[in-house]
Image 1 (cartoon, rainbow over the protein chains, first blue to last red):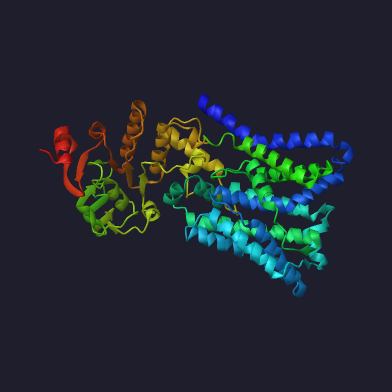
Image 2: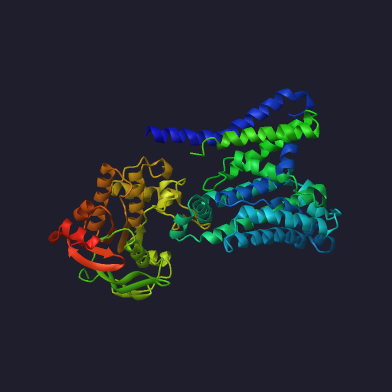
Length: 317
Length: 245
């Protein structure tokens, strides 16, 4: 019984890390950067707006990691999706552009997924390769040129617009996290994802179609990256091959800090949201501190290292 | 009805390429009967379990379940027909709660969105573990927090819950201590009382003699013989297993 309760405390601790970390960093910046305007509503809203694409990517990654897979290619999918969407919007109406953007994301995810699920290749290597492959495709699609997005409805819907004075990027974040959480925690598919990551053989002999689960989680990752691409394109009113390029480390860190196990079977969509906001806050605070870019990178890297170490402390048993 | 065999294996033969794993095996099981499958390592016991549970198809021979000829494509097909297996490695998802393991792959849902009915799964699990006297802290406990005996209890309870005809047990107490073994054996007695047919693989002859009605001996894929447990003794079974008279 004491073993059980100590384990429960361990679980609480792991899940509480992201809340405490969030609070600690928030308070730290609130005090030290008060005069620099960290606490202004404008700055706080900005943090949420800037993290919206990363949060959506993080939701997708929770599914992949929980199923025991990983996706390293989502940053490249963001760029290819955003560019495809922007190009489509130049000659087609809005719904076509949106469908192209999302469809490209899901299709690339399916490409990853088929190689992993049916050709039995490790997802780490598959997506490491497709990360490079689609980064190259993104560069060659428009010869490194950025593509402007002139469609005002699109930029309103996915970027600067508001609904009842709530910024659309906040709404997308809420929808993405809510739908992700619902599927992850409250559907049979979510349960099958967790079982597949936890013990694939047990899942298999229990009649769960393990290969199909692996395919679907990578498609979800691709679809989320596609949506993140639309959000970038909407906010910046342009698509470029660099979109998503620098998100890999941030998003993985956000998801891990949020309580999702790297080796599957355990995770949290809401935790990933908090992890993502934490990363956004960190970015924002370090910029307000007027650190050089190189120093920002060093400090951010160290803090992520500490955060990941702390949140993984108990899972190695 | 009770006279009819739940499981009937006739002239089962299984070869992997040129290697013969099971040769001309025949066995009948009735409801409420425990048959022990014994033999040395590599005698073909696990292969036989896998054939009955649909993991392998026999090269030749017939499998009848309740008198119906069956040809299971995979383990799911066998499960759909009331055959459950308790695997040696238990096939539990360690980081999930007990109730999710109990309903693994067969989760209950509710409402128009088909959302998981966790409350009902938790409640049914609690009722089941109470009925079978599997002592765990709660149906919501995480599997990795449980002892080996408790985990084995969950795996057997799961098989009981879903099996309508036949339970196959592969070394159910191999990793357990004395007290835990006794509890699992009590659990198996309860399955028997529920009129399920039970086929159990065990290396412990003491256990075999405690639990079984009949003992079937395999040696190098060959069926050496079947004995009534009451009318045989350990010496006979050991010499059948080893082939030394």
